[in-house]
Length: 363
Ligand SMILES: Nc1ncnc2c1ncn2[C@@H]1O[C@H](COP(=O)(O)OP(=O)(O)OP(=O)(O)O)[C@@H](O)[C@H]1O
Image 1 (cartoon, helix red, strand yellow):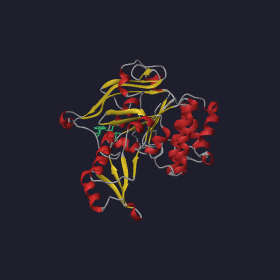
Image 2 (cartoon, rainbow, N blue to C red):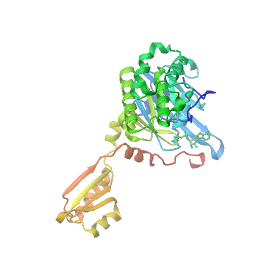
Image 3 (cartoon, rainbow, N blue to C red):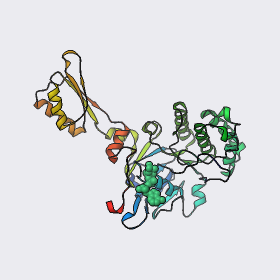
Image 4 (cartoon, rainbow, N blue to C red):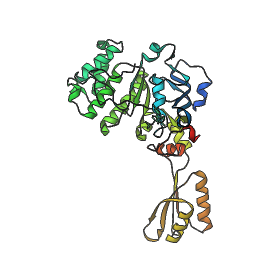
């Protein structure tokens, strides 16, 4: 279940979200019937805000499946529709079309069954009770999840240890630092025994060590306890480390849905480094006129210059052909593989802080 703000409740409490995923390339989600092992099934979800020319289609026919026990990252530029998608899945926004099934229960037909074992931390914080201690918060939220906190006391102790909160277990949340409060928020989400959790920017504001600990704990919970995690983060390293699969959303649509490895493999070449004694300043300028030269370094002695040029696979052949046509002897050619950020930029045309979102007038 997703908790809203309580009267006495707490923390910095912003709300918003991100992320989800499916099997191989999202389209198949509409074709197959929900399989038992799917924790989340979204079919043809649409949400439009406003009307007329100013209407914004925030979610534009999204279908995806998230297998139980998997960790799926949801990525997209600002305004891509991630928050609206997650809020629609969680029942915080009413979609115009489409269906959502959580752990086999349709959210409209059986909301209790659907949301009973689902929890979320939106916008990096949740509403813990500041006057209660850390441990009391864990016990409280476990109780209102319908679980006897004594029956999961070991789990609570382990989560407190894993998140380095054991020393603070008996401290009221209001006396903790911002980063610690963030960890308590996570701890209460994990402590309740939910089977599916949606985490928006869970590592935001955490120090490096805490962030790594959290990432390890999420992987462990997925692998050993079959927890399903839908995770949003603008930190691509977190996504690469922790996620089995990544769903990239742009303009309300799923533009990629695959494993991190496959996305990187299919990303091709992002740049090439070429060194040659024949590359003098004039020639480097000629290359610059035709290609995107991102670096030019003069090498020692007779080795000439090494240039780095941003190219895709086709561009690589064009560059090498061009250099050969100028009788440039190629002493070292090294391709640079893309990272997840490069793949993201090439699929969305934007960096992850760039604006997106499409009004009807744009279409
Ligand atoms: N309540 C609303 N009323 C009108 N437009 C909205 C509303 N909520 C979202 N939008 C619009 O829908 C589009 C998608 O927004 P959304 O917040 O879902 O994107 P996002 O991918 O979560 O972005 P960010 O990464 O910046 O949080 C945007 O153009 C946004 O302006």
